[in-house]
Image (cartoon, rainbow, N blue to C red; front, top):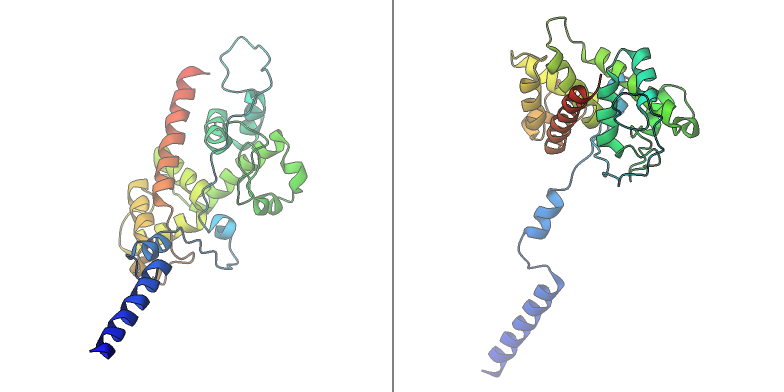
Length: 253
């Protein structure tokens, strides 16, 4: 009887220790670890690697802006003239560049994300390197904007869209590539084509971006950038930048 009592006490002592140390808690801790964003950046000799891994920058607080010079026209930010000059070089609408800047940095030229993106347009150091621009120079607001504009052109070429692609689909695919990575978007396009769907439609590509979070899709032979876990952020980014772009177009010439 005494031996049985001692065994019971010993068992309860061990059980209590395990509970207090967290080893027998519910699986929520393990689930939380599984929910963390996984960034997969394989080494690939291709332009798609420029933004292969998904990283969502923190939204910085708005910075005090220098006063814009009066021009007799409605302004978006103190950087309108810089946006216009960059747009004239690249062919992009300056109001689109402004919408991107708003969502990337809230027009804060000193913004730096925890992953190293910097400036008005949140340029990654590797992007500045691709265009042979020293990082210190790339922090200058005008150069930062021009780099983003050049990156959009590079993304546009990498998407390999035909003349039949709509302007709206092209814009959505470019924005998704800018924030989520051209490599992941190209993966989604290849998956769409493999399944006889249109790789130039944002509705189709966004669905495959979401599916690229599942092993049967990100382990497919046509996929080069692995798992994608940033679908919610990417969809929100595309939607919000487009919304601001439309608003800026209504407000300005």
